[in-house]
Image (cartoon, rainbow, N blue to C red; front, side, top):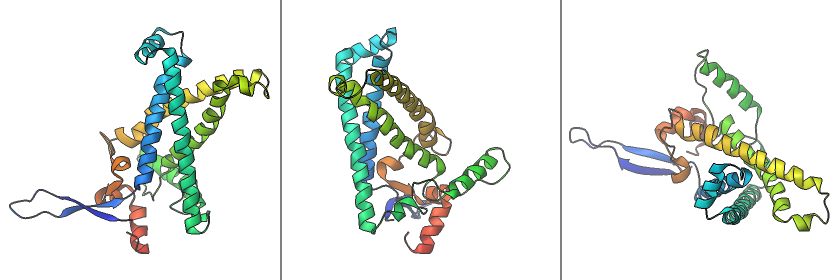
Length: 249
């Protein structure tokens, strides 16, 4: 984890204040892929909702802003294609990282892994106790349990929405091998899962990432890739102490 020096704090009474130290949390490729996922998700949500609720007056108004229902459909498909490419790029980066490390075990187990583990169950229990004032605030490592949930929700959504989308995009082609009722199911799960994803992202994900008191008005780490030393110690003390012990800070 690299260290970067930020701008010095304002000097007090003419004395130079200590420089704030920052630690790298996300690499440039990770930030670029997140930006791509974020932009294409918003694009799919804005163009998909008027298509899903085409009979509603507000949907017609939104579609006109986007250039009409046909234009909204084109934008929707472009955003979906780019999103799939972003997802595929992430998977390729994961495989490349596994090869560089000599195996997939570090990706599947340990504090740096995004795979849910027994410690997450303990963290959930401790966090709920803290919510009701029955215990201290838990100290998390690199990934919290809600961040892992967010991460795997993308995989779930990509398989459900990304798997049903091509059936609706190329119905004539897939009708050669699939029965007609499959397209009704694809339309249903595509719209309902997309609506669920949009509701989750714009409530739970935004709240945890930007709106909760510790982050308000916005967390910038996913854009800058940097986390301040104070933030790291206060929110991820277990990670900070582990990296110090391992000499990786």
